[in-house]
Length: 129
Image 1 (spheres, helix red, strand yellow):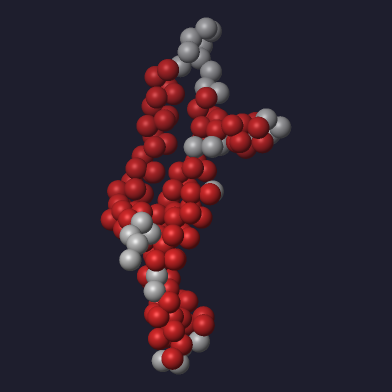
Image 2 (cartoon, rainbow, N blue to C red):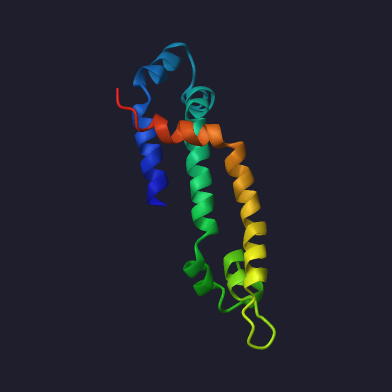
Protein backbone atom coordinates (compact mmCIF):
# COMPACT_ATOMS: atom_id res chain seq x y z
CA UNK A 1 0.00 0.00 0.00
CA UNK A 2 1.60 3.29 -1.06
CA UNK A 3 0.42 5.18 2.02
CA UNK A 4 2.25 2.84 4.38
CA UNK A 5 5.45 3.15 2.37
CA UNK A 6 5.11 6.93 2.45
CA UNK A 7 4.57 7.02 6.23
CA UNK A 8 7.49 4.66 6.93
CA UNK A 9 9.81 6.49 4.54
CA UNK A 10 9.12 9.86 6.11
CA UNK A 11 9.53 8.36 9.58
CA UNK A 12 12.88 6.71 8.79
CA UNK A 13 14.16 9.90 7.18
CA UNK A 14 13.34 11.73 10.41
CA UNK A 15 15.61 9.46 12.47
CA UNK A 16 19.07 10.95 13.04
CA UNK A 17 21.91 8.95 11.47
CA UNK A 18 24.11 9.67 14.47
CA UNK A 19 22.14 7.12 16.53
CA UNK A 20 23.19 4.30 14.23
CA UNK A 21 26.77 5.56 14.06
CA UNK A 22 26.97 5.80 17.87
CA UNK A 23 25.76 2.23 18.24
CA UNK A 24 28.36 1.00 15.77
CA UNK A 25 31.09 2.94 17.60
CA UNK A 26 29.96 1.37 20.89
CA UNK A 27 30.56 -2.07 19.37
CA UNK A 28 27.09 -3.13 18.29
CA UNK A 29 26.76 -5.22 15.18
CA UNK A 30 24.48 -3.97 12.39
CA UNK A 31 21.81 -6.49 13.42
CA UNK A 32 22.02 -5.43 17.08
CA UNK A 33 21.77 -1.80 16.01
CA UNK A 34 18.69 -2.59 13.99
CA UNK A 35 17.01 -4.84 16.57
CA UNK A 36 17.84 -3.03 19.82
CA UNK A 37 17.83 0.60 18.69
CA UNK A 38 16.00 1.16 15.41
CA UNK A 39 13.05 -1.21 15.92
CA UNK A 40 12.06 0.30 19.31
CA UNK A 41 12.38 3.81 17.87
CA UNK A 42 10.20 2.91 14.89
CA UNK A 43 7.59 0.96 16.86
CA UNK A 44 4.94 3.72 16.66
CA UNK A 45 5.35 3.98 12.88
CA UNK A 46 5.30 0.20 12.44
CA UNK A 47 2.14 -0.16 14.53
CA UNK A 48 0.45 2.70 12.67
CA UNK A 49 1.29 1.43 9.20
CA UNK A 50 0.47 -2.15 10.16
CA UNK A 51 -2.95 -1.17 11.44
CA UNK A 52 -3.68 1.03 8.43
CA UNK A 53 -2.64 -1.76 6.05
CA UNK A 54 -4.83 -4.22 7.98
CA UNK A 55 -7.84 -1.93 7.73
CA UNK A 56 -7.24 -1.33 4.01
CA UNK A 57 -6.95 -5.07 3.35
CA UNK A 58 -10.00 -5.76 5.52
CA UNK A 59 -12.11 -3.36 3.48
CA UNK A 60 -10.93 -4.35 0.00
CA UNK A 61 -14.25 -5.47 -1.42
CA UNK A 62 -13.78 -5.56 -5.20
CA UNK A 63 -10.45 -7.39 -5.07
CA UNK A 64 -11.90 -10.02 -2.72
CA UNK A 65 -15.05 -10.39 -4.81
CA UNK A 66 -13.06 -10.96 -7.99
CA UNK A 67 -10.88 -13.70 -6.52
CA UNK A 68 -13.61 -15.50 -4.56
CA UNK A 69 -16.05 -15.94 -7.44
CA UNK A 70 -14.52 -19.32 -8.21
CA UNK A 71 -14.73 -20.63 -4.66
CA UNK A 72 -17.76 -19.33 -2.74
CA UNK A 73 -16.60 -21.13 0.42
CA UNK A 74 -13.52 -18.88 0.67
CA UNK A 75 -15.22 -15.49 0.82
CA UNK A 76 -13.99 -12.59 2.87
CA UNK A 77 -16.29 -10.95 5.41
CA UNK A 78 -17.39 -7.92 3.33
CA UNK A 79 -18.24 -10.15 0.36
CA UNK A 80 -20.14 -12.60 2.59
CA UNK A 81 -22.13 -9.76 4.17
CA UNK A 82 -23.02 -8.35 0.76
CA UNK A 83 -24.26 -11.78 -0.34
CA UNK A 84 -26.70 -12.21 2.55
CA UNK A 85 -29.95 -13.39 1.04
CA UNK A 86 -33.37 -12.47 2.33
CA UNK A 87 -36.57 -14.48 2.24
CA UNK A 88 -38.41 -13.95 -1.01
CA UNK A 89 -37.90 -10.38 -2.18
CA UNK A 90 -36.79 -9.11 1.20
CA UNK A 91 -33.53 -7.20 1.46
CA UNK A 92 -31.90 -8.22 4.78
CA UNK A 93 -30.87 -4.74 5.88
CA UNK A 94 -30.99 -5.50 9.62
CA UNK A 95 -28.89 -8.65 9.24
CA UNK A 96 -26.30 -6.80 7.14
CA UNK A 97 -26.09 -3.97 9.67
CA UNK A 98 -25.74 -6.40 12.57
CA UNK A 99 -23.01 -8.36 10.78
CA UNK A 100 -21.19 -5.14 9.91
CA UNK A 101 -21.23 -3.98 13.54
CA UNK A 102 -19.94 -7.36 14.73
CA UNK A 103 -17.16 -7.33 12.14
CA UNK A 104 -16.19 -3.74 12.98
CA UNK A 105 -15.73 -4.43 16.70
CA UNK A 106 -12.28 -6.15 16.41
CA UNK A 107 -10.90 -3.30 14.30
CA UNK A 108 -12.31 -0.75 16.74
CA UNK A 109 -10.75 -2.59 19.69
CA UNK A 110 -7.35 -2.64 17.91
CA UNK A 111 -7.55 1.08 17.22
CA UNK A 112 -8.46 1.82 20.83
CA UNK A 113 -5.62 -0.33 22.15
CA UNK A 114 -2.99 1.20 19.86
CA UNK A 115 -4.43 4.74 19.77
CA UNK A 116 -1.42 6.41 21.35
CA UNK A 117 1.03 4.61 19.05
CA UNK A 118 -1.05 5.45 15.98
CA UNK A 119 -0.97 9.15 16.79
CA UNK A 120 2.77 9.01 17.55
CA UNK A 121 3.42 7.19 14.28
CA UNK A 122 1.40 9.57 12.15
CA UNK A 123 2.87 12.73 13.67
CA UNK A 124 6.48 11.61 14.09
CA UNK A 125 7.21 11.42 10.37
CA UNK A 126 5.60 14.78 9.72
CA UNK A 127 7.97 16.79 11.92
CA UNK A 128 10.90 18.20 10.01
CA UNK A 129 13.89 19.32 11.96
